[in-house]
Length: 118
Ligand SMILES: [Zn+2]
Image 1 (cartoon, helix red, strand yellow):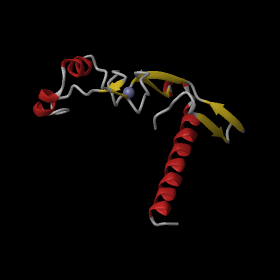
Image 2 (tube, rainbow, N blue to C red; image 1 turned 90 degrees about the horizontal axis):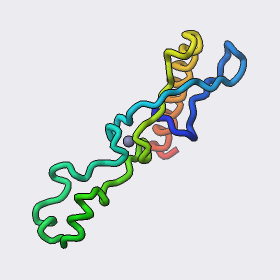
Image 3 (cartoon, protein in one colour; image 1 turned 90 degrees about the vertical axis):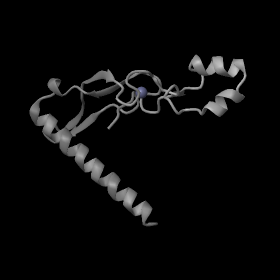
Image 4 (cartoon, rainbow, N blue to C red; image 1 turned 120 degrees about the horizontal axis):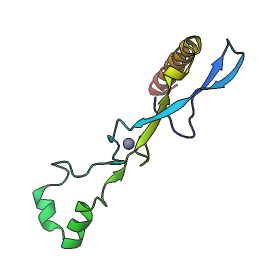
C-alpha cells in the first residue's frame, strides 16, 4: 500500500482500545526510483519518425523533460511514506498487519462485486 499525506496509517487497536497513528518514514518512490516523474526518455517512448516530424522547440522541450508525466505514485514528491516498523511494538505491528490484510480482502471482495455487476 502506498501512503500519502492524506492517507496516514492509523491502526484501530484493540490492545490500546483507541486509534493509534503509526510512525512513518520516507523511502525513495519505488515506481519512479526517486525521479518524481515517469521517464519519457526511455528508448522507444517516441519513434524516429515522430522525432523527425518535431520542430526544434518540441525536441528541446522533450529533452528538458517537459513531456515527462508526474509520477502517479508519489505525485512528484520523489519519496513515499511507509510504516516505520522498527518503531512500532510487535503486538501493534501484528494488529496492523491483520488490519491491512482484512482491508485488502474487503477491497478485493468489493472489486469482485463491481466486476460481477453487483
Ligand atoms: Zn514516484
